[in-house]
Length: 435
Image (tube, rainbow, N blue to C red; front, side):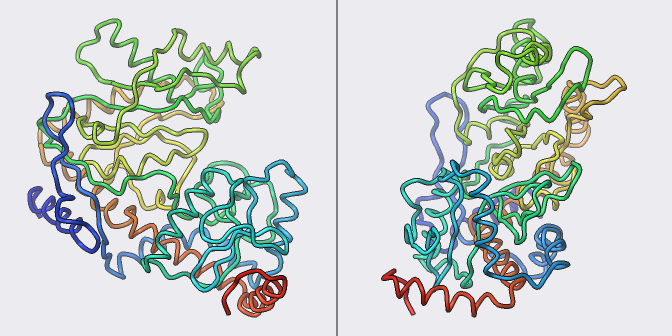
């Protein structure tokens, strides 16, 4: 399918169920640059065979550990809850038990329903986002979930959890097994496709974000104790601008000062500054539609995984993906050279000399390839956009959540019987749960 027909097909998807006729409008930005076309996505239908392949590459990998331990006991969900509270009793806004009953969310403390549907008053932002989005899907009939009880958060590689936890991301490159079952995050994501003709885009690699740092990249190069990709590339971008580097490569900016509290007032902070020795300016925030004005969009880790990737893939720009050990639910399906291009060929605590600036080489190569064969990079962009529309839209996220909870429930042969008794006890206390 040609590029024009590909865009028409995506626009057709955007007009399916629930999208008003005016939603395919052109977005007029305040600057004189060309207009970015922004199209909300409606319901996206994915072939069952493609969906099974997607689950095999992602969800099934998370389930292997737990299927080897099955059958599990439903009551042990509370055992895990109490274990976490004993370890971190002050994390009250994070530790919540969730009951799905008759297609409605109930937020629980032991023996009590604290909230129905939307999150309790004291809840972490990711809990609030999850409750709002999933309740919206449930109330409008877009999603049917099984009766089940679970706990959203992370277990991590060093804690022996007796039942699975659900998490928005985890680490796969470390000692020990991270046993969380990944589910889609719903905190960020516009569910909108942003496009601009390739020849009207700026020939730069663009990033805007908060200066988060995982502190994973220890001692990657001499005189740099802790390399933070966001601050390092923002420093390089500013250095290039100050020294009038030609041609230009980067437009990487931080929207807040690079304040890293775990490095302050220690000798480690001085070594961190060795990675980017000059002050880094703060720049304005940019909406995702502005990102579409650039040929290359840089995806950088945050404190761990960053939720930005799915949004970048919904533009018709090429994603430059920083190599990292952090993943979301869909990362294991992505292939460098097929859906995105990878950089940051760095190993923490490595003895041989390495570089932090290989993104320049990657951009040089992409510019050469684009000049030699304009269809070369468009093939990658089309694959990335198509993947995002199918699996990372609201339709894909809702479907994945249902499949993850259904598979989780299958690990507990006693789940239905347990919930009947558990719900009956709550009703006896006056809690408003339907029969």
